[in-house]
Length: 200
Length: 243
Image (cartoon, rainbow over all chains, first blue to last red; front, side):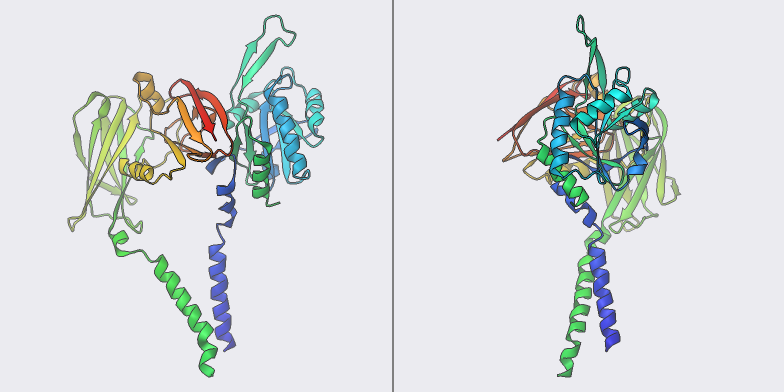
């Protein structure tokens, strides 16, 4: 009799296991950003960071990365986005081990690592700046479809500005680009998505 | 009562049989003939190409004894319809060599007739390049029937944009309104924008960058206005979300 019950319980367990295989994807319909389904597979990248070490995508599996492309002298989109990202980060109780907030400079000519450190940590001590002045930056921008166009200013001390993509990108724990946030997306939408993906 | 001791087992067996019946393909699905199309090269270019056609039943099992024909036509100059019969079958696919005499928007109609007389037909519209300057990852073509069915099933709250093959090239040569310059949405009504880029190249549609073959879905929860350039229409696209 017990053997029969063992078989029955095994069958039940198998059915339960089969029905739960897609549970990892259940959150997708609840995401509030612009969702890529399936997510975009990203090539690995490695750029020098303000932490003093290279920031390599493949070393951050299991974490969510919020990545934004901008420049330190940006007068509008970049500081506004990072002020919102500070709210996101603090609202989530600063989950440093699970969430990385990354600023990639599109202006390596002016943004050295020292000034980037000053800039990113002004928003939050955990925020990371990335810099590269070679092909790696262009490859990375191409992967995300980021464009940046230099606009020379006449008499201004700034000399030039960039017209650039102001979208924030979310890389999921598998290292894929899953969600994009248009400039102006309420911070609570981003909080919602990070919570869903990290299940926190 | 001894018999009640077996009730859980009987219930469980009934459950397993029920699941089995639920998952079983109905007969009409088994009888269904599915036609799939790919090509080498992908995308196709002016000159020679191989059409790679799969003919499967409703369970995805290849049918190897079908009589498969294709009719190709260069749509942009109303070229003649050219009939070609499949004579090669390799690795579960019918291989049909064709020749495109001009680049441009073109159609391929595949007909598969089974030995028992059943026939299935699918039309595919694609774009033939002179010589593409990009690398595209091969993926199956979508038939016109599949696209129509998808659009019929779009929920009321969704606004869909499907960017077709060669959209940017087509717009370069003559006006085709693949993307409206003004997209009107509302939080309480049509609140979700879905962009599927079936083109062979990455495209920006307003503020959204959608790589070739990708689908992006954005639900709007608050009124807002978003703008950006469209790489297809070479002009601005404005998305207005009202209450």
